Each structure stands twice: as structure tokens, then as C-alpha cells.
Image (cartoon, rainbow, N blue to C red; front, side):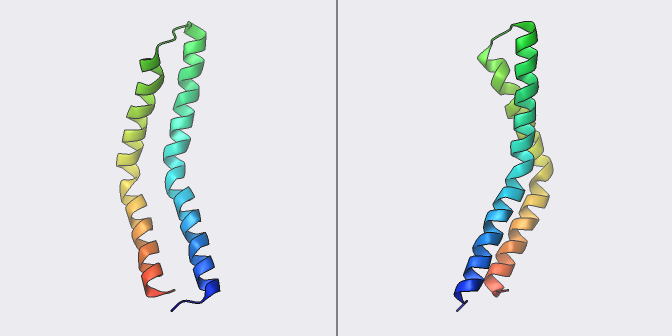
Length: 85
């Protein structure tokens, strides 16, 4: 049974992993959202579809490209957690 400090360290690692794995998707979604907002402000086209569709497409592409890395990081963490080290 792991000690309290090992569980705290494992919890910290889990939170850092969650941030690291989600950061590429969130950052690209934010960047695309900003670019679309600037484009909408410049052209004064205020269409809701135009605001969401590019973000959806870019997030899908980033998820497809980053999935192997995300999966390997999560699997490595699970292996460390179940081995106790």
C-alpha cells in the first residue's frame, strides 16, 4: 500500500499530466478562436457557425495528430501508478 506522500505525488503527477495532455488542444482552440474573432471584427460578419466550425475542425485535427502522444503519456502514467513508482 502506497504511503501518503506517494499518493500526493501521484496526484500531483496526474494533475500535471492532465494539463500537459489538454494544453495543445486548448491552446490551438484559443488561437483559432482569436483569429476568427479578429476576422469577424474586421469583416463585420457575425455568424455563429463561422465562430465555431473552424475551432471544431482544428480541434479534431489536433486530437488526431496528438492522440498517439497523449495515449502514450497516459499509459506511461498508468503503468507508473499501478507499479507504485
